[in-house]
Image 1 (cartoon, helix red, strand yellow):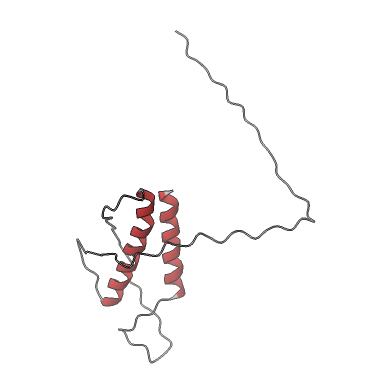
Image 2 (cartoon, one colour):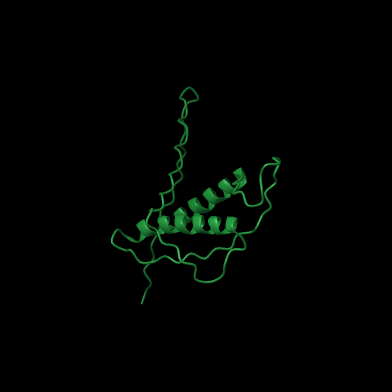
Length: 125
C-alpha cells in the first residue's frame, strides 16, 4: 500500500506601493462592549483586600463577561466565571488632598486594563 503524497505549492509575494502614495492611518482598535447595567456579580472564592481592589475586581470581571457572552452566542446566557489575580500597587499621590480611600485610576492602570481586555478579545476570536 502506497501512502498518498501531497505537494504544496509555496509562493512568496511582495507588496509595495510608490512613495508618492500616502499611507492610511491604522484603524482604531475595536471598542470594548459596555457591560450590561443589569449584570450581577457574585464572589465565589476569595475576597479583595480593600474597597479599591473590590471595584477593580468587579470592573475586570464585568468587562471580561461582557466580552465572553457575545462569543458564546446570542441565546447563551449562562453565567461566566472569571478568575482574577491582580497585583496590588501603591498609587503615587502628588496631591495632598487625596486620601487612601479615594479611588484614583492611573494611566498605567487604564493601559493594563485595555491590553488585557483586547488580549481576551483576541483569544476568544
